[in-house]
Length: 224
Image 1: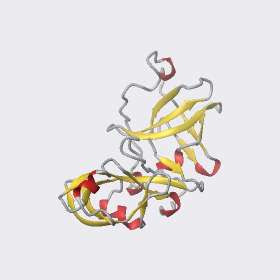
Image 2: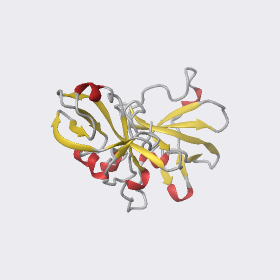
Image 3: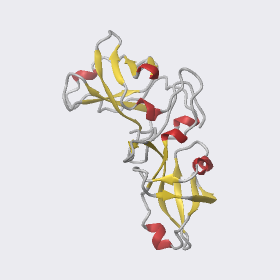
């Protein structure tokens, strides 16, 4: 789900990558970047932990498969690099480029939006955004059912409107969703018409599952 957190000074941080493993014996690490171009990861300047307390200064030195190989300032051997395995890397939300078009947004910006049913009734609140391989989905905590969350495909059919200026979205849940005895929205669903992706779709937690970080996405596409 979208991994957008606030530091002790209430500044929001967005996950843009994760250290997956050490590389070699001199302290280099492999980094899974959630930016479309992995090298964009270092373009934001220093990266931080989720609370903005620990700073990581990365210098790219190469690539392996779809991952970035980088040196981190102060990390000089494999043991130190190994201790960073699984570390998520964040940037301040303010460091991400502004969207330009009215229907452009980062997936991280969807978290916290109030969701309204197409009939005008309150449906719930967006709790997270994720991508489990079949397209972006949003997790919505239901208004009328405490501790109950549904998962909706993030498609034009299901989410016809997002209005960031009003902090809301309109949803049209698939028929039968709320009658799923095993938990609404828990079944895998493949969207028929996924929204158009862009670099912003991968430049903040994204949108990926929380296991891999926060992701970004836009309604029509915005490159970060």
